[in-house]
Image 1 (cartoon, rainbow, N blue to C red):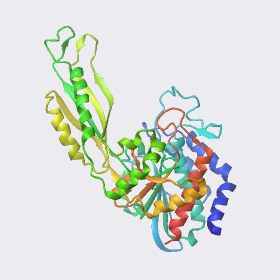
Image 2: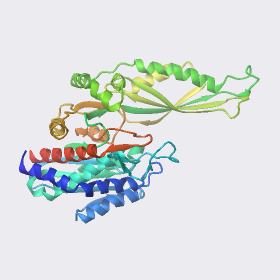
Image 3: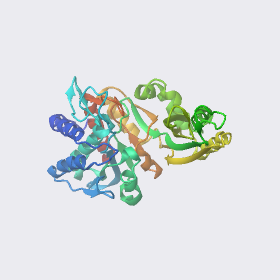
Image 4: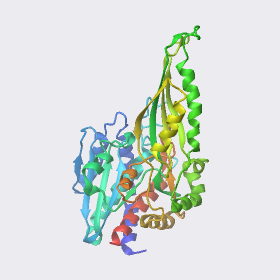
Length: 415
């Protein structure tokens, strides 16, 4: 290990308490989305950057959702590495089901608890401290390093990363490193694409006893849901190198996302997340609304799915379909340079060599991939993500911080 790399790792150990307190304070800075007001959490980051005397830009097309961007130039020409993390988190409602304060960042049994602990204030903290440490030695690096701390990821980024990508091409870079939850045994090089559809069933409706007057919109909705399961039979056309990577990664996929995840990575999946219909038990519903979350694997186009949806709904003249949201599946080289850098450093630091996988859920990394920029995700396990008692083990957090730091250093040292 070079002296510079050792010095970086020593600095993290020396600053453990400071890093941990920043991370815990970041969790306490509430930023649920919706509603999406991240100003308190953004100010928490700004305070640290100001203490380090690091210049940054606040880009806020929507005032309550600021994005923070900082860049530094190396001492010589080279490539541009972008570090990306988001500030907003899932909401917690009334906190039902939590055994710890969701905004308390409690340290217990070697774990930090709280909303955003893994998704993704651990990874964003790793990006921030990577930027801080490397900016101190910028003269000895090659190329450019950029930090992007964005809002609005949980609602697909129209005011966050998507806005930056569309309006600030100088932030595209040559490679992106992101710390979304992945599990220390995997590196995400791609992700499935969400297609959200609203199905509305309309019938005349009637008194509950007058079933001869009108079909039930809710009964039709039930039959429709059963027919939509046929979407899972759509075949994907995945590049050979991705197929090989996913085959080798099946155990890691299940370890990161739960048993059975590897079986659906390359399958179209359907989840009907919302069903709304009926006013009263003795009334035949005249309207029923379904919101469906369809996930497209690599190698499946939206039009293929919509063609099958149209075939299915043709048998239900009472049904109309509306697209709510869509992001195509995305991927980059599963054996790219940053993957090999991350794998080597993770193995040296944790004893485990992560494998490249495709994610079931979405991240802002997809936006860089759409621009042809290789974008990789390496972060803590998704314990409690989007659920209750979200947490990260302290040692897993520091493993992510260290792996990001030395991997960014390696990439920018090569020029």
